[in-house]
Image (tube, rainbow, N blue to C red; front, side, top):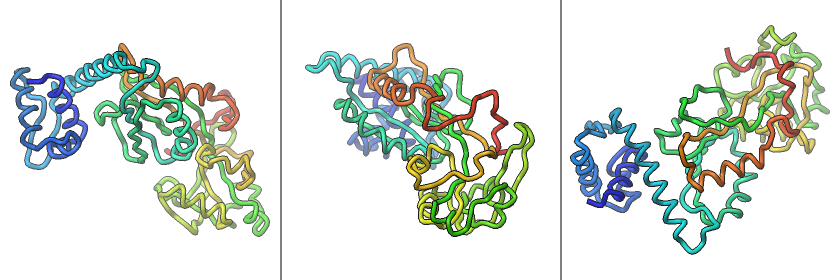
Length: 316
């Protein structure tokens, strides 16, 4: 049995959640994939995968073995790259996860990363579904909401994004600008379908107290891009995190409203599994992101000084 090939088969089965899907990726039949996994379990004397008629799931042993298998394959691929003709370039596939709100930033920076790393192939998933970096087979993830990370993860803050109310200059000329949160009732709003934001926006007062302001929505959607497009066209007021506006505030395409009233902030972090030796392909991306976001306090996302920040006001 080719141990390395068997490890690759097992990892692909775990990542894709089934023999058939792994077979498509590996260009193998379902029977061959199944035989590789069965041979591996027989060799180890342990069950790695629970099989039912509907789904596959890793056993506790399988979860632990998966991480070790990935490390072995990473080391093997790194050794192969070092033996190649071009030792100055990292090689291999980098799997990246990011939420849809970070999509505009990826659009801006990833082409530059690809130009600088010709040996890297990217697999990028942009989604608002919850993921587990290790379980779901990603090398690195970007997150824009607080979540508990396993102690084995390395987490680095990229920035802090303030939640702002904004509108197009045309909307402000036609309807005026609200001077207080209470005046939002006199305006048309463009709103996320999230239950916490659909009917009210939450402000903070005096650094501590929070209060809800009911809003009426002309457009409700789970698409930030759609809401931003409507705002740019003058359809209403928009509530967004500043970094998702793609430079609209800086260019004047949108203007900030109620700047003296605080709605909350979101930390933006990069997370990846802690490893004794970080693969070269991952190291290039980490270094690139640190270069792009060297200090969360830099201009662009304009966070308030930490001593002045009230508690985040987006969620209960």
